[in-house]
Length: 167
Image (cartoon, rainbow, N blue to C red):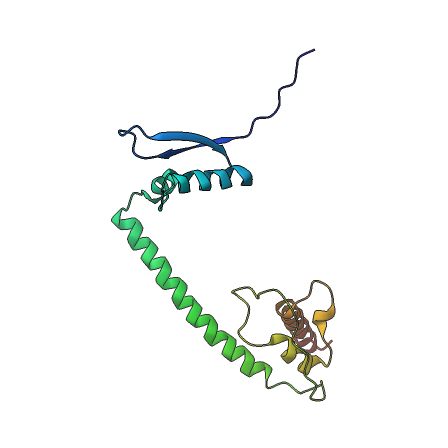
């Protein structure tokens, strides 16, 4: 029966000094205790600044002019679309304010929710929908303000199509 060998910890080499001046080299694993030993060793060697070799490799690039131009264009479009979304949020909030208040003036308390997605409206859609419907659809698991708004708009569109057909 073959003897099983113990799994070995992956090692990382650390070098103090430059390759041409008899640099001291030691190996460390990437586990916490060894990384703390590495920090102590570098401190004992009088190191004040540490640079990872892989960092330098990651920062090398092919900065072709057409790539930079395309990136600049994409950034400008991203910022432009952001301003258009702010305008859309304002217009949507204005429109929601025109509906009849079925909530009897009651305002829902703020939820302790995780940070909103970057594409979430800048206004409190949940309270607007509560005011319009007189009920909070977001209490249903999996339904947030945007999903509730989509459901309502689909239902309203379906009802208006039925009424226009004489149903």
